[in-house]
Image (cartoon, rainbow, N blue to C red; front, side, top):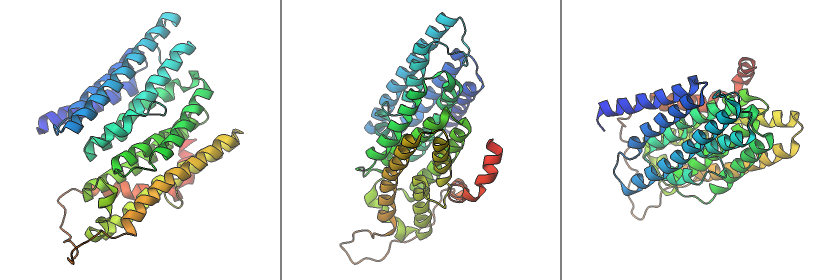
Length: 348
């Protein structure tokens, strides 16, 4: 892609999200979401592959549906209350429509069906943008309007997302689909705690972004998109395979890695709020997710690539890709757990 076009598209992505962050008016927030959607569509379709075009079309249709719902709901709310302010969502029908549309935008269950299919059709870097940056603007709106939304609806969305995110990833062989289900499950963790402590939602979002970035950048570095080709990673780059296995376990939420921190704090907060059943379901759903991360670790570190010829190990060719973002995201994804007390001090 032409660097000038790429710069324009990435600037528009940044502008759309910033516009939504800064707005207190529903029309301005909607405009930011639209700029965001329109900026990523050329990035998704840049390879002119039928699967990429199909994924782009699916993404465009779902995002356009969600945007139309947001516009309709905010107009209804303004008609009823006379205000366009984000924090004044006093009409229950409008607020329910808004949360449904925003859940469709970020892929919360049961509005998640587009997410694995779209992510499967994209290259890894566009998939990374879709899994991280594109979540920020809708989540900012969800956080701002959370107090006006029915708590039972938020809890249902959170529980369904973690369960479906864990269940859906069990039978997958494509790594991008596995990461899509992982994203759905993590969004569920963020949504369920939102009504009690929004700071933990932001903490979970931050750790999710770094862990997912580390996973996508690693897959890009090793040019891997299927479980069957993961077995080649160890012979090509043993250190990368080791850190990738740790990043996947961190995504699963195992101590002493960073991914354990948000899960631990969220379960603790749910218990404090006298919600033991929700906390138990969330913990069991985390085990489902952990199973498919362990499958990936097993394929990567405990199996060798099937070889029918007696050939030597493939050469470890020096990569020309920049590895600084990968190094930073892996370091954060693995080593932040000892910083938990300091992060809690900053968050509260």
